Amino acid sequence: MSKITRDMGESRSSGLKKTRDRIAQGLGALLLGQKEVDEALLKRLKACLISADLGASVTSHIIEQAIQQTRRQSLNSLPALVEGLRLALVNKLKPAEKSLTVDRLQKPFTILLVGVNGAGKTATAGKLGHSLIQAGFSVLLAAGDTFRAAAVEQLASWGRRINSPVISQQTGSDAAAVIFDAMSAARTRAIDVVLADTSGRLHNKEGLMDELGKIRRIMTKFDSQAPHEVLLVLDGTTGRNGLQQVLKFQQVARVSGLVINKLDGTAKGGFLAEAVSQTGLPVYYLGVGEGLNDLKPFSAEDYAEELLGGLRENK
Ligand SMILES: Nc1nc2c(ncn2[C@@H]2O[C@H](COP(=O)(O)OP(=O)(O)OP(=O)(O)O)[C@@H](O)[C@H]2O)c(=O)[nH]1
Ligand SMILES: [Mg+2]
Image 1 (cartoon, rainbow, N blue to C red):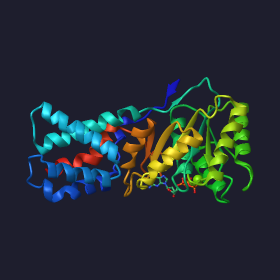
Image 2: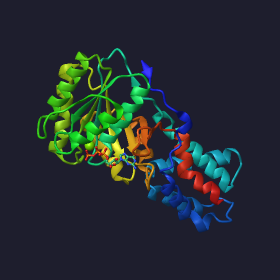
Image 3: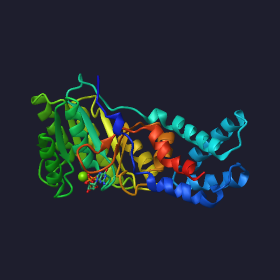
Image 4: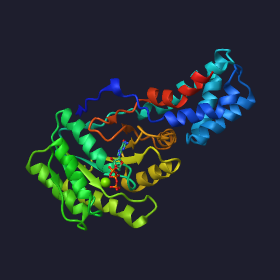
């Protein structure tokens, strides 16, 4: 097994700024000058965290943990509570900090990218391909989005950027067949990793979701272990709907990890905490732009700091 080298030094995402500001501003008046923690503040804090999409159960859990910690230390100050919240969120999310690992014995190692329309699947195929190549793997892209006419050209363009072959067929052909062909081409050419793009599909459209089951079955015919990873690609600007996507895709496509994109813009990203808490899935990457190097590892510390750091600054 070889881990993909990741530059932890650049792991900090900036995309949660909006959520962080919202949490901090939501508490604004209460926080200003208030050093003691009372029921009113806790109630307001809870509402703010829930409105930032952290979800009721994660919010209750981290507030409870933070209160316990401050009591243990006989502290009743706001900074102590904020530090307790941060620690509780880090502990909750730490298990999701996992590297995507390519097993060289599985050749080609196949990674299927799934998700709703526009989440960033195709861009993730390109960026992840680049990162794998940097880590010493050879990569082949499979144009499993046969639905949109422009989809093949979009993937081909990423293929040119990263200098990797792309296997495609014409629009309207069977996605499972394209991916099967790509796996077989990769084996013939001794390529290490196949990154299979798919069309965007709404998680509540049964027919389209069933197609993912078919893609999986056909991949299994080529290699009983395939797909080795199924990455659910999510748009970080999605609110609570992100959680619904995770639950549904996990059920149908046996997702093995998450990629959360667009965390460079006005992203919310708060749903990540609840998605991780409810599914136990790792967050392999955060997408922070459209450049080749704009895929960063997920760091629980950075995420918690991004979300809650504003509270500390406001104290
Ligand atoms: N700013 C920013 N833009 C991104 C990121 N990831 C993807 N995009 C952009 O978002 C748009 C949609 O990305 P795609 O990769 O085409 O998304 P997709 O999931 O393949 O979309 P469909 O194939 O239509 O379902 C493109 O313009 C991407 O360049 C990101 O992390 N940050
Ligand atoms: Mg696409």
